[in-house]
Image (cartoon, rainbow, N blue to C red; front, side, top):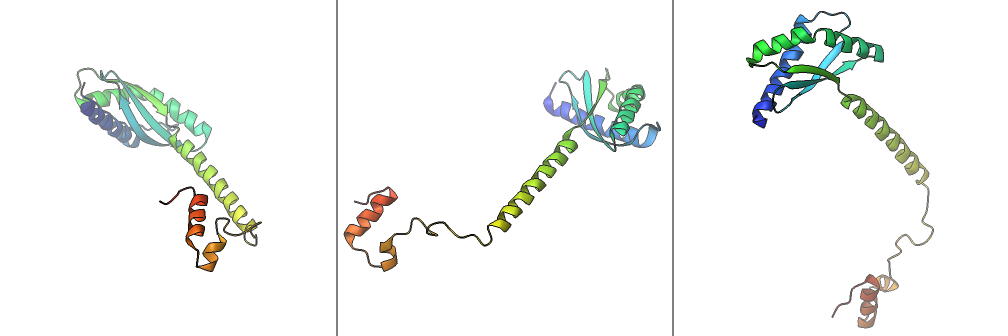
Length: 161
């Protein structure tokens, strides 16, 4: 199967499932669900529909049960609207991406707070030595002779010829 055609079909399945959940499925266990993605195998026999649920673990469990019980009617609608000879089987999988993104946001907030704390501690701090350890006395004079320039170049790790 052409990968572009399979992707278009997966997108269409995602739209159909989202419309079905919004308009036709009236299960009270179905929480605030969002269809995030759909993937289909190359032979078009199996489709995986990813979803997220806003709410608690109990809401997720109820939504999973509602989707499982409505799988037959959703599959028949997918077959009717896509016109495929063999309608793919549907598998509903909870998408962990929003939870991962939330966890990542929490970690970034902790890192930002630690950076702010370190910056606050460093406000009145002074250097233990010179502010610029690479500063040479010759640079302060403004007049360095040729031998001093060679020494400065050697210290910097390159030699001018």
